[in-house]
Length: 122
Image 1 (cartoon, rainbow, N blue to C red):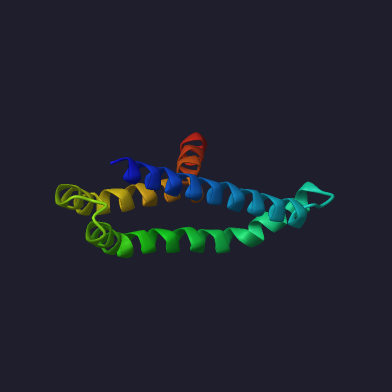
Image 2 (tube, rainbow, N blue to C red):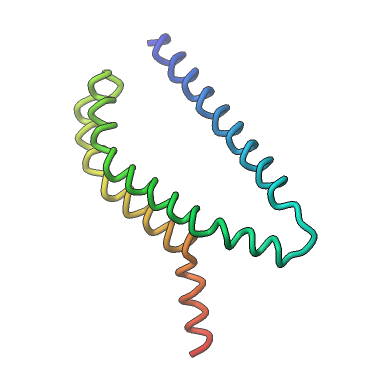
């Protein structure tokens, strides 16, 4: 029982550290990449990256949709998940993908801001 808890904690700390380091690395890269003198040049840099980042986000959503069942089966095979949890997670696949798509549309594409802008203009 305690051995499983320690390995989970170790994995959690490992992934958290990795996420913090990747965030710091991306922040450092963007800080040096976007050091410019004017707001217009920063806006041009952001516009240049916008399509690449949008494609990356949609690719991640597609990978989640396609790889969800494979991940759940792998977790079941390694006995990390019970059969009941496997059934539940398999059923939650499309709910998770739907939430990711909604987040992308609202936050990434600015659908909510565009809708409010249309209502204000009307």
